[in-house]
Amino acid sequence: MSTDVTIKIGGGAGQGIQTVGQLLALSCHAAGLYLLGINDFESRIHGGHSFFQLRISDSPVRAADHRVHMLVAMDEATVELHQAQVVADGIILADREQATQSGKVLAVPVARLAGEAGSAITANTVAAGAALALLGAPIEIFQAVLAKQFKHKNEKILAENVAAAKLGYAAVQGISFAHAVDWSGRTKKGQLVEGAQALALGALAGDCRFAAFYPMSPATGIMMHLAAYQDGFPLVVEQAEDEIAAVNMSIGASFAGARALTATAGGGFCLMTEGLGLAGITETPLVIINGQRPGPATGLATRTAQGDLLFVIRAAQDDFPRFVFAPGTPAEAFETTARALHLAEKYQVPAIILVDQYFNDSLYVSENGFAAPSKIERMLCAEGPSGDPAQYKRYRLTESGISPRRLPCRGEELVMATGNEHREDGHTSEAITDRIAQVRKRAAKQNGMLAEMHPCRRYHGDAALLLVGWGSTDGVLREAVDMLRRESVDAGCLHFCDLWPFPVQATMLALATAEKFFVVEQNSTGQFAQLLRQQTGLVSSGSILKYDGRPFYPEHVRRQVLEHMG
Image (cartoon, rainbow, N blue to C red; front, side, top):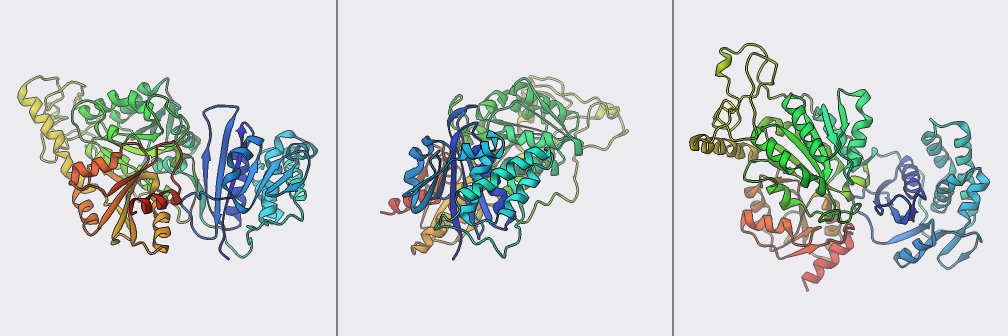
């Protein structure tokens, strides 16, 4: 039989919920299983309620399941909150002193067993051991994972965790679990990677040399991964005093010739918009990663959303060209980040990458690895003499809109830049002719930029009914399509990563044969549906929206589609 099991580990912040999930994920991955892990946590250091949900399968999975087969409850609140999600033949592993089994609830004295192992902080290892034992995992797999995880710790810590694992296994010995997994005969699949890590690796592949940030969930993880690579790469990662400083430091580094980026959330992006405009008028390459979360203001600081699309397309006053991307898979995030750094430099414009908390904090299996560009092409004027230095014009009027870019102090030419409107040589100007000429020059880049845009990805794209999404909903839509097709609904989906400049012709072609299409997104006003209508004149058959801060499940999309269809 095929394997498709979901485990949810819940408890308060500070109880090691993510640690239990990571240990389970590493063990499943070591055994050659596919998995997807999602994080759900409150904006607090201690208490509240958090959970890590892990879906394991013998086939690739890119979406979470609404059904829970095993609930690992590190506190009683988890039982109360999630017991209704547990399937009829599922199990609830509860941390209770009296070891008993009653109905779905299997009581295991996790805290006491951790004490017996030698340290109360090994409670998460006890819980992970019990869960793996119920799943049928050989203890040797878990011991190997622990040995790798604690190889940099002292022998006492490793011994305590191994003892905790054995006690967890022993506590559920003889208990049957209807959804136990066959752990034999598989080879390890690819690598485990978080969405945030894929973005950081893409930045390295794109030759990012400087990154500045101010910590803001859910973007902090991107910069923490980048900072971890500093020792092995020609890279500087700087924590600034605020988001305004972060974006301006990145612009300064880019002006000096280093490929640079910054990462933030929607609220931080608000503070960066003046810097975004400065990059626009000075034509300084810049990449900003915006990890979306629900707003406005602080909103839901650790939840997920897709509410910043229209904002980032029009952010900062007046018109100037920019790229906007929204990758949907770790591989696409890697490629898009590297490409954004390249395109920002090629066209001398800002590039914005939209991700979200769900994507950044989820754990994926990447089977094929990531391929960095074979070479880095720098779009700069050659160093050294170039004739009469007085003839150099940073903002020279060109048919493509792209002007020659020399670096300051790297030649005899004087490189001038200003946040004011300017002449071709960079001097401030309020002359009507200069203003019109520079606006038209910047706008002329749009034709070349549009040619760089990738069309949407199609999955059963010739179907009569299409689901249209962007960013992190890609895997959810594909699974929803599979569900609908099993019910004899001729369904397919389109996923958009390249959002601005909007690929009008390719989009109209992709939707030309659809009898109906529904736009699926995580905001309350259907922002992509609005953009689609504005750019193409196409009106969706309806929107499937979610804006509670939690991600879509495929079943939710399937149900909404069927309701729309009557």
